[in-house]
Length: 394
Image 1 (spheres, rainbow, N blue to C red):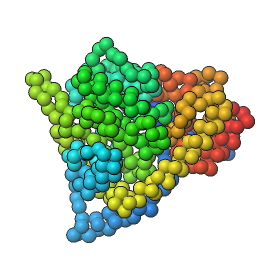
Image 2 (tube, rainbow, N blue to C red):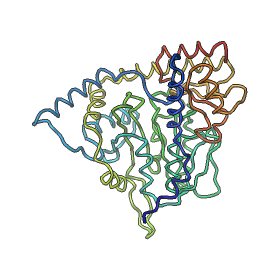
Image 3 (cartoon, rainbow, N blue to C red):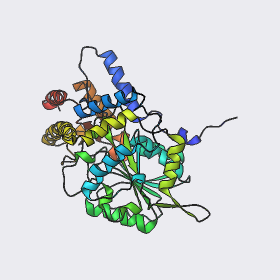
Image 4 (cartoon, helix red, strand yellow):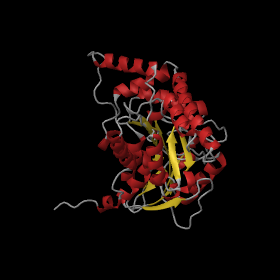
């Protein structure tokens, strides 16, 4: 008889955004006459840029000809794109990344979850609270012990050993950033305590504040302990065609029970070779053409569009005394619920009174209770309409 992994029984019945989607569909079914504005899930609304579309066309043309056709890609992605990523995302910030340290994949969500397969079970991991649910669920499935960082603005002192620390900045869901000084404390702690940092910088392109980092490798010695995850979903609008990458430095070492030091990079490559057949050539070429044709300004226009929406929402809720993070460095607005009601009650209040869907803060952890997340990824028109609906009644 085959038995299940009992850890799955410890998960919440529904993934947060799946539950929101169910509530959305239920509302639409029962309220045909009302226009629903969805500001919950962080999905983009602008089309792909011209240079990305041109890259797709070039790749499609290449695949239609025998002399340029390509089959399976390398499991870590093609070198033509790796070169552009390293040049544009790292060398411009004086960060040196070796070609073999860069792994291109379909999503950061997959890599952040799958990398745990390399580690022994029963780890102790530290997660921020509020936190992106994928970090929690993937560690529950593995049976790991979870310690929560209850204040992301201060350093986490710990009496017990922590194997992995997850950091997400700009933070999802709060939009908060981390200072260089505080991040250095985490790096120093990791070096001193033989701890690995998983640094999720999916929203680094939205950063406006200069007293923070776009990459953890801007911190001295971070390559000894930190894995960095980045996604093109938000920066290039690739939520439909999927592409991301992970940096696993050669310097990070893990330990076997026979006291051997083993490179995390080599183990991650082995994991990729086993579980993954490489990223889509068409998706790779789409972003390659953006980089290679020097059209990053196209992406910045889209990012600025979403930041304008986020700023409008933040200013509105600030005027209502409900804003929690005042600076705009991400596409999210983290607010306090009206009259201190709980997050799910506020979800239904927004839905039933304004036909607006957001994300209950409790879905991101205990410290998210009494809070609510809205996204700037909607259209400008919907953002304005949402504000107008709420203005006199909220």
